[in-house]
Image (spheres, one colour):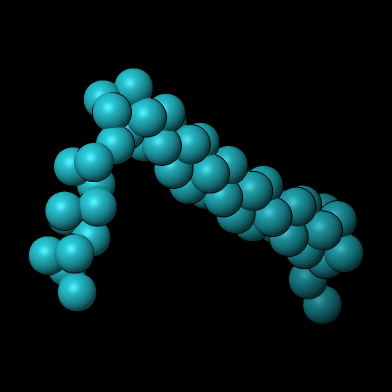
Length: 59
């Protein structure tokens, strides 16, 4: 199976391979950006929901 994939990839022109590579990089990059964005949103919600421990007085 991998040999067929390699043979199929050699049929593409160099410009097509570059375009495909850029598309893959763009998709993976957008997935990483979205994942970090979600983590930041989760962190911000967690901080907003919890009381500030520095201002709370101890009993």
